[in-house]
Amino acid sequence: MDELIELKEVYKKYKSSTDWVLKNISLNIYKSTIMFICGPSGVGKSTLLHIIGLMDKPDKGEVIVKFLKENDASDLEHIRLYNIGFVFQYHYLIENLTIKENILLPNWAKKQRHIKLEMDDYIKECIKVLGIEHTLNRYPYELSGGEQQRAALARALANRPKLVVADEPTGNLDQKNAENVICLIKELRKIYNISFVIATHNISLTKYGDEVIHLKDGKIER
Ligand SMILES: Nc1ncnc2c1ncn2[C@@H]1O[C@H](COP(=O)(O)OP(=O)(O)O)[C@@H](O)[C@H]1O
Ligand SMILES: [Mg+2]
Image (cartoon, rainbow, N blue to C red; front, side, top):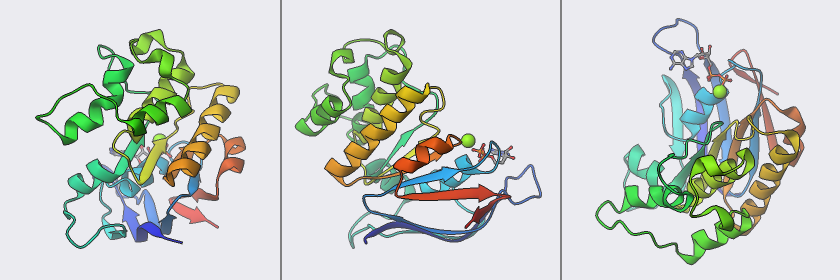
């Protein structure tokens, strides 16, 4: 199986604390797989996701990006912008932009000088799979919680990522909407071969994953 990202003996602590939040974490993110990261609040799920998503760096150990080609840029910001999408517990859609404008934001970040509101066939298809065509000209407050999270998912997909990192994406949803979002993630994985790494404390959702990692005391409990 193709590997996207490998973590090798990763340790992380925050400046304000002497304790390690993550201790000796080694794992592989493979292409087109859904990995759940589970554990109670405060165990280090978000910290691990930020490292996997190249938003933060470990204090010890290595994060190896395996999908780069020879001529690709090697700075992390560039790699992240072009290859990784993010979804968070609160949708973080921008309230004074329509859903369509929100979804197209990551593309604006890439092509700073060519701001246009056109959706290519790929993003149109994502929006259709996610069932949010009817929301495109609305503002975030005019959507239900489930629709807001599906719009946030569409935005995470807009830059055609290889990997989507989702931090408690269903944390604010009821069980039915939570399962719906996870089933859509499965569908998107099938269509686009995207990998998803999803932090959750809702153990009942992990049956939809290919791989489940439990964090305890900053370590992977195997
Ligand atoms: N930016 C930060 N600065 C200092 N400590 C932090 C920071 N972010 C998280 N922590 C601490 O690291 C630990 C793990 O946090 P986090 O990764 O957010 O856990 P989870 O997502 O599993 O709830 C907690 O004890 C938290 O207080
Ligand atoms: Mg968290």
